[in-house]
Length: 368
Image 1 (cartoon, rainbow, N blue to C red):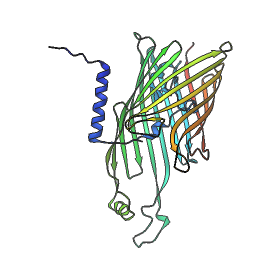
Image 2 (cartoon, helix red, strand yellow; image 1 turned 90 degrees about the horizontal axis):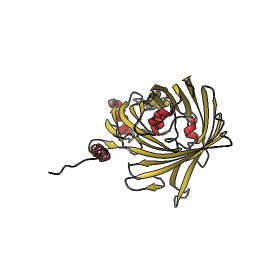
Image 3 (cartoon, rainbow, N blue to C red; image 1 turned 90 degrees about the vertical axis):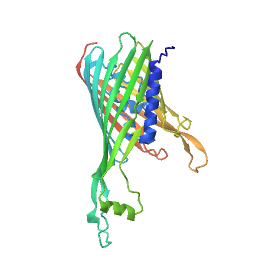
Image 4 (cartoon, rainbow, N blue to C red; image 1 turned 180 degrees about the horizontal axis):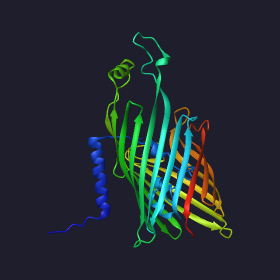
């Protein structure tokens, strides 16, 4: 009899294939599912065009690449960020905490909230007699919330290799009309070799499943029908895996006073054709570029290019390549690091930019 040896890589491929098969049979795969988890955290990364999976260190690694938690130089780190989009209509908040467990492992937790509050509910705008009564308008909130539990560990036998993973819980609500619970896993790895930093970040590696429960009264359903709208129903929404590959390199100049770090990320999605630089019917790839220049580890100047897309021109006749430029600054003083980013999140033709600040606090700083 022949003995067949199956490699760990092949086993992983079979598991992912089973996940895709299960997703297609029992759930509804969404191309843009849980998009609030793709915004990013930390003004440093946002200023660098979200090119961050290789160079990220410390508390924000719980979001970008949990393997980067092992690079933190402090016992405890706390990260905070608040941002507002679309003239303050949408608010995005992040808080993270990471703790070194021992010399080979670090744990962390990240909390994210993206919400649009006080949305007018006009389902009862017209009374039983057909009269419009604006006093009947109420409000509700649409909130996306996520908790990421992170763990990272170095492999002493594999020099330069760092591994990490996330278990994430997602809660999405639409006022009293319905909501969803979701669960998923992320996995990240970093490899340091002669000053080069290589990284791979797999998001939703098993597929992230959101189970939606819709609760509408008969009156609300009748309103939907009368206005020609489709009645939403309970469903299972699936976010398919995404793979981000990155490489970064840092150089020192002028007696190590000046540091220059560059990073390139390749964002690979597998949920069908997107408007990216490279694409097929199954796979799409979008690059991102980031650059950081520092002086004495105190002040940093950053820039990045991301969201590189193929879009139709204003006449709708020709595909053109569009790029989102970002810019930022950072200051590190003792236990505090304050970062700022100017990011383009709106219609690039009218330059709707957002100002984003984030703060990192080091606790029980260890001597170097």
